[in-house]
Image (cartoon, rainbow over all chains, first blue to last red; front, side, top):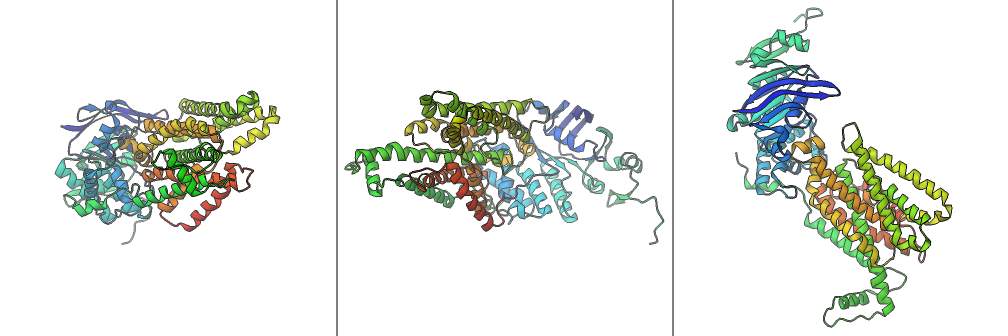
Length: 263
Length: 354
């Protein structure tokens, strides 16, 4: 069954269609990487799925229209890891991760034992035990990003939308975060849609790639079919080589101009 | 994977800790006591307690105060202290609420034009209403109406904006409306310069000694406002992540913000109506609590209510006793003592705060 259905989804911002008639069906348990040059509409498409921006067309989650869903129900289905999350410096890690439980609480209720358990599980998964009392203002960029992912996990939504989730992480924590997300996906059928700039990392984890350009789908398929020299050259204006790495592929930038280096 | 009991125990949000709650309540209690005892006529702690016991019909209790002293205690001092506590609680919690809702540490209870509107209402009442009417009765009502109209106008202007209707739009609308109302108020004042003194003293703020009538007047507004603000205190923490993230966590941002802003504003309008413009309380009290305890809104809001109440009672004691029998405007006292205190807090706290 498909987790997310998009039917001619269009988002107009400032008189310009930033997302322009996108159709797609995303299966449950799929890991879909949205790639594309700056301004291709990746972030805006994610925001439309979470109903953070108004759109025309139809977006359905599990067969129900996003537009007609109460906010709180939508938040139980979809968790968002934004590109630039705000992390109030006075908040402790526990408090921040517990905010992920908001859609499971009444507007006037406070967190109960189940909520604290969910938060503790999320902290444990992101290797953040011992950080509970730390203020967000005292964390490094990478620690903050893990805390943000932990908040999304504590939300216990079936769909997680990630906008450049690992930009601030070092290569080890990048892999750790993605391995974790992939484990959750495999274990519990989480659906992941991630806007990603790092094409190699995307190719290592995603089982499907959608290349956006000018708000439209330029290519859609397994990484091997989307990450081709031709497509990347025409949509990113980049020269690359695609090389096989451990059964998957990696994208390596290639310098075409200038003197040939002596190695 | 399941979390161990120990891990779960470490995951908690700092609500109102018993230590902080007790300290705040003790502070309020001491303030109220000082407020009731301080004054030109020394009533004595024992006599006051006896009188209170007699009022509560405790068996065997009888008052040793003369009827005049009884009247001073129950018709002047106690209502004035309670009024100061209500106004202080309202201004401090409204300030904290605005700071959370608008994500602006400098937001104060007068942000959306309440002050300018109430000022205009009061000025019109003082300038145009007959002498007897303008004093006790009509002035607070006119100020309340003016404050409410200004805020409604702010909201209408904010909603009419073509740009994205976010929190900043509402603040800009507030600035616009306040400028307009202030101009109007200055004009009326200029045309009626013989009432300048009266308008000026209202603007500087004071807690009137008008017995219970003002307490009764503002109690319902303050009670409703404080209940709404405290009920939604966890959501204010969510709102501090910004509109988008709060929405993606299932919060109906516009509706919650409206509820909080309406509550804080109506309460502030009621407080301003009886006390005039007492500056600084809505900024200094929440920030001092924040700097000292580093807590989030769910603890900050109840603490602001309690400590704001105690703070203004003490400030009012200074206002009415420092140059007794003359009174210093309360707005002058809050800023004169508040600003150095705040500077001290800023200086002595490090890290932790926001």
